[in-house]
Image (cartoon, rainbow, N blue to C red; front, top):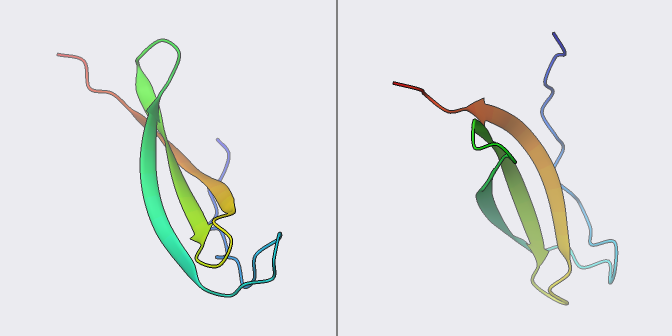
Length: 63
């Protein structure tokens, strides 16, 4: 089983070198609906460039 490691938040924007970010966490369903992917988006406050980091996959609960 692969180890999950924590990502390092960006220190500057890849597009404009801005240093202030807004964080958003989202969940995207997998193709078959058996789980979801967790992603964290860092949005540059200066230019609105979005950097997305894949966090983990969570499994759905089947009753």
